[in-house]
Length: 254
Image (tube, rainbow, N blue to C red):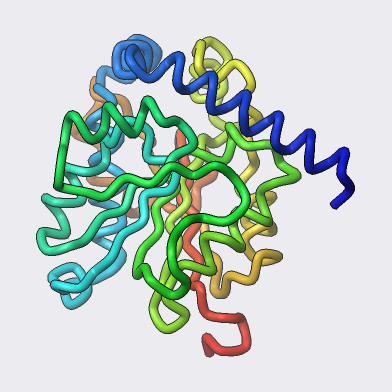
């Protein structure tokens, strides 16, 4: 990477950090107003993702006393209580570029998690340390040129035996999602990413058995239909999608 590219990358990270520091104190209110057409609160979507992961990992790992979870781009810590609910014995590390967001998360949830400021480049975490990494609607805020490097860095800290990344993103094929992002103040610099493009980036970053599932099909007004969602994972009209990838090298995962 050239010195100019490094400088630009640093400038982009500083911009994101400053933006999210500014929005941190009013994040919940802004997010609530932005998603009011769904009839749900931000907590609903935070729980949705953690519950979805819980369904995927199975009973044995769910109850493991040594399960270690990295919440990459954790923001104000909305996932923490749900990680505790669905993975009662887990150890959680929240990593974010926004110091103010981490301060708010710590004030809300204290010792339920550990909090790490990510200043770009290398995560200040040891290699091969986590069983699960969650990235919940984070990458559309990150310049695309940085995606593969960050995915490789997340893969570095995941266990090469059993580590899995669960990456959730907004689906640009869903018109309501596209509208919500377009009108959201803290998404003003966001670049929505098609699932196939993000899937290719995970593969290029070394993840194995990368799969995609579409999620969040029905607003609260038709919540009685939500039981159908787990039967619709390949219908590319959900408001969000989840990519799952193994940290093991592709030729080690067979």
